[in-house]
Image (cartoon, rainbow, N blue to C red; front, side, top):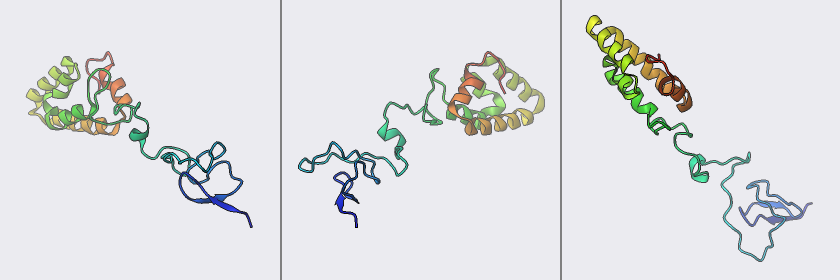
Length: 150
């Protein structure tokens, strides 16, 4: 039977000749058992981080696809989606995105159709904005040269 030892990082039983712990993936080749072990890395069984934003603070909330994080232009996908949901019949989300032509079209449609068509279009756009990624939102609504992106 193989001789066993405890991993100094996570405390699990491993083979004595192991150079890497199979549980916490710590490198055991440089470790001497007289020193105090450092805290174990926060890696799962497959070698990737389990807590996305805490272990890699360089990733911004916008890159992590947080709906209410401001993008590079200062526009938030979540704010635009909420505006489209509640005030979409007035085209407020287009004014927020810096597309006043689209907003004016919605206001005119609202006056001509008693708010039914723009309300449905605003609801559809809100659902689309909530379902897309931040990069897709930026490409479709913020940096596009179109004055009426749909």
